[in-house]
Image (cartoon, rainbow, N blue to C red; front, side, top):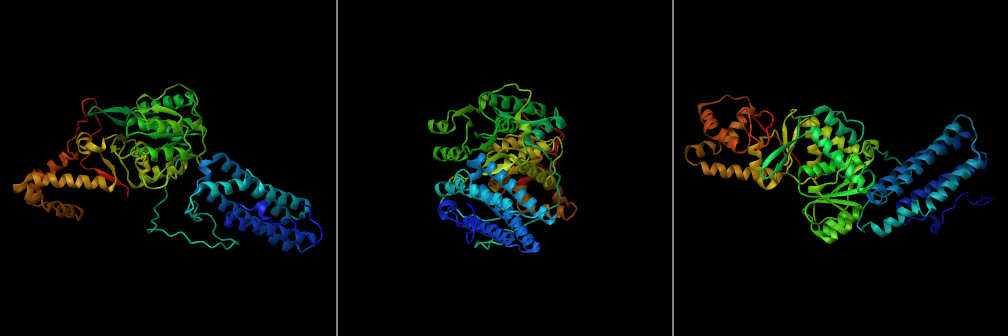
Length: 518
């Protein structure tokens, strides 16, 4: 690729360089143009100021292009399906960006830019863009794997990226469906999820971490027990051949063992992939295949297709256990992918989103800031744990020193009566069901009680919020109607609460908070 009189220093050739993605082909051409301009400026002895201007533009545009390319690879699924390729690619970008920065700094320090330096940059771009295992690789992935209706929206994943660029791409700006509400600063623990899990045991020790539902009653598990169980299962996964950095699916009903398997993945350095237990066989297999899972935790006997897509299958009721003094999860970087989540909509394409350790810890910190719960309190865990909201809400309860109660969704009211939780985690349909049950209870009251309840609750609630006093009617309604209704829904005012034959819990609260997801 030597350059002589009248020749271009580096020339674009479609057959050699094109990725068949117009956006990035145009960006690559602009990089070529900048390098050609720099070569001409050096070769013809242009002013140092002119050379400096080109170097600064080359540095700025290189940073923009690499950021855009990396965001695209994450957004279209390439970074998940070919994680090693993506991270190697990103390391190459970082090294070349550092080299360009050094070029600029040396020039500003008075060191001349030589043709040898320019040839290095040219050869790097040539091998990087034309290389079958680098830019051509994601181009091939895009053409063969990504759905035709996929539309890349720059800035969607990384809104902090500078949007100023030389390349004027034709694109629609990202439009938000609602206002953005910015809260206050929160303190996010720095480290991996494994560090955080160990910290739970250190901070909360023998306090109750979970209420596991067994045969109509709740059994307690302490934070020390939770950590011990998760460590043992993490070692069991590794002993069974699940490698750190690979993906493991969890497809079971919400239960204590689900969370143990999830925490075990963090400790083992394995990426968890929750799969909604309500998915049919076709949807479950598609999710397994898309996520490239290497093992699966399931309840009962999975179909041959579901088991075959995973390879190694573990029964949630008989998780493998082992004993290892050191676990690889403690070596994870906060920015490493910790889990891959999917839409629960059975009609949607099974495209996952990777969440890092820092993403999960940030969500926990934000929930704790907005919805403080007393240490020793209790919150519900009745939604599918494949729903990331329920999983993060469970982390938030534990971070606060509160217990997660695995309440069967089909018997929520019975669970509430036994537990009297301080926090109810739910979706709108959960509250709709509770409202329907409350209305049915009021209908059953009849007579004076029915008349006191009918329309009085909303009015009384508003008075209490406004600081109003109690009338005789309020006192009667409280004694005859509202206290018994609260009791039937688990909102108790007594100082003790029954949690079933084998469990006792913290002192009661007179109210129940709610954390909802849309």
